[in-house]
Amino acid sequence: MVDEETKSSSKTFEKRVFSGVQPTGGLTLGNYLGAVKRFVEMQNEEYETLYCVVDQHAITAWQNPLDLRNNTRQITAFFIAAGIDPNSSILFNQSAVAEHAQLGWIFNCVARMGWMQRMTQFKDKAGKNAQNAALGLFAYPALMAADILLYHATHVPVGDDQKQHLELTRDIAIKFNHDYEVDFFPVTEPVIGGAASRVMSLRDGTKKMSKSDPSDLSRINMSDDADTINLKIKKAKTDAEALPSEKAGLENRPEAENLVKIYAALGDQSVESALKDVGGKQFSEFKPILAERAVELLSPISEEMNRLMQNTDEIDLLLAAGAERAREIAGPILEKTYDIVGMLKP
Image 1 (cartoon, rainbow, N blue to C red):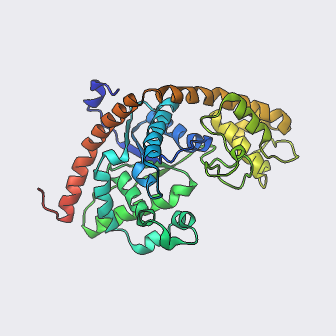
Image 2 (spheres, rainbow, N blue to C red; image 1 turned 180 degrees about the horizontal axis):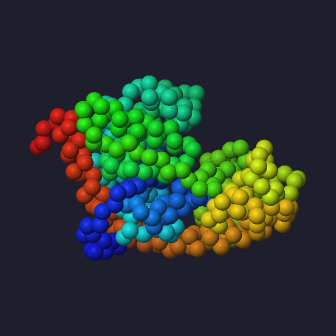
Image 3 (cartoon, helix red, strand yellow; image 1 turned 30 degrees about the vertical axis):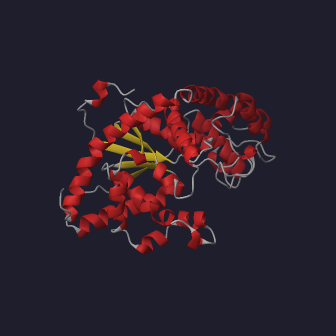
């Protein structure tokens, strides 16, 4: 639970981080190294941190209601097991704070159709039959901007696939400030991830690791046990050459580069530092070392997630307490936004 001392704390921060993860199931190593590991690091730095399970974004594609609830709790358990402290960070689910949707509508009226049509993720997710896609899938970058700007977040950790959406967030903030002749919403800065901010498939180093890949061997799931992790790394696609001693030697070797980046990120190393450890090794030597490092770090997270999921009532209470803390920040910002726009108070 969130203790009373934390709830009443008056500590202020010059930097505020917001980020979120969709509860669509199938947590992978990519979710951990590409997002949550960095979330934990920022929690322990000079930032005020808000981390959100973005369940409203999840329903841009149809979700089974029972699965959505379970996945929301599972993401929360993942956050906590990975090191996010609900007493240090504000941890909540998006739909519990109505101000997200309310500010999202304001931003729907600020954003331009042309901006939305340039979003490559809509094109990728909608596919060839975009006319059958949900309106929410088209408009959700404006809601994402609301997620961030509702808290006047100054920084957002992003991977390569989210840079375009953060650029849109910045455009919306600038246009709102210009249209209403105010200096109200901050122009949020990206925080680029570490060695493995984009984790690639174990079967194809040119494709992102994904829970939707039909091959389970393409990814390490956060629920995988030690034997499964060892097997997947053993079967990971490689090439015939030994590992290089310098980063330049990884060029045009996507599978080798991916495995080295995973090794580096798991050990909080740079790629250059990792290659000083493993450069010159054949993959038959390197893979067991990588597997050992992965199991050592990931197994305790998996075990703690499973333990937390045995008591979902406690997870629900944590989320409710986090939503209350989030609304303390969001409420005044939305009220001021309404005032700027010209809406009457009730």
